Image (cartoon, rainbow, N blue to C red; front, side):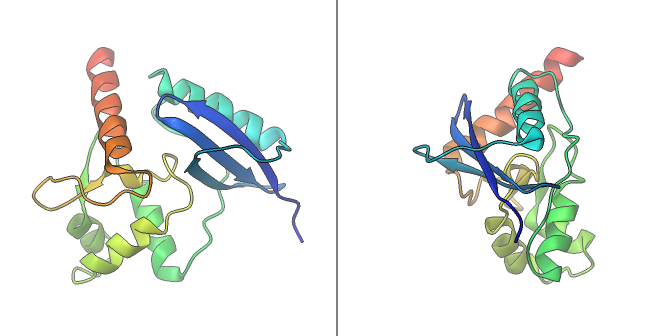
Amino acid sequence: MDTQYISYYDSPIGLIKITANENAITGLDFVYKKTKEEENELIIICKKQLDEYFKGERIEFDLNIHLNGTEFQVAVWNELKKIPYGEKRSYKDIAKAIGNEKAVRAVGGANNKNKIAIIVPCHRVVGSDGSLTGYAGGLWRKQWLLEHEKTCLKQKL
């Protein structure tokens, strides 16, 4: 059994619980309170990269992550990682990209099951009309993250 490490990061949009094993980040979730913490080197690096992301200094994460899900879910999550910083894609775009155009609802379901928020950027997926739909961390966080990325990109130009 892998040792699980847990720590927390105080972000501008709330407390983020970071979980990891010896080899990879296994979870990034918004939570309301802390429990016991035990961090490893991966979590320390993850916190540093989150800090850079929230300061607008990092647009891509360089972390080993472990995606634990069905083959379909992992395919969706891998596609999410390809969405460029500051850009959005629709659920239909993701379904097309994984070769299953009719799987729009299933893509939404996989998005909802993403256990590694921000790093696997499910916040960049919107409805086909551009509307903000579903985000486990709350739509206000999704809006904040999209605005943050848009603002940081403009500042870099």
